[in-house]
Image (cartoon, rainbow, N blue to C red; front, side, top):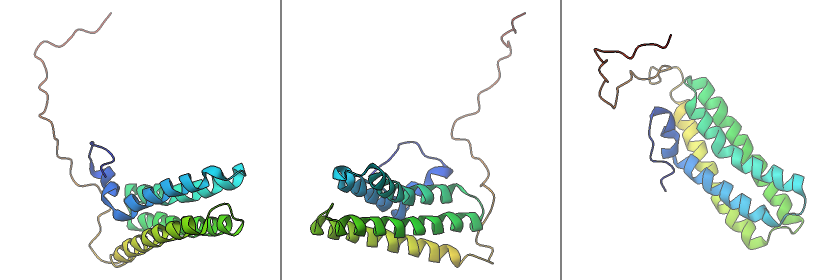
Length: 155
């Protein structure tokens, strides 16, 4: 699925399967909780599910490896919270066994993708494989030439 037609170095997280499937997890959590009468519980479940992909995105926007990993570990914590709330909703019979099973399947997939992303980044600690600075900017548009007759400033 394409989320946006606009691309730049900071939007690369949209290519991460952990983020993409995290968005699917959020959509599923949102739909499953539609019939939950307790506003606070519904909100907490949705917020926890949405926090997964949001923290993956924020992690990607960080430049240091330590910050990147910190936000991915926060996303991992949100995964645990999301599953705990889903189990609670199943236990009080606000979501069906079948819906709970479907949710658990996608949750498990996202969780494993996130763990693999964390593991791959953890291997870069203490190596020279990580740059904390952005790559040099390569303009995608031709440089606009300044006019020889600039517009006079208002007096």
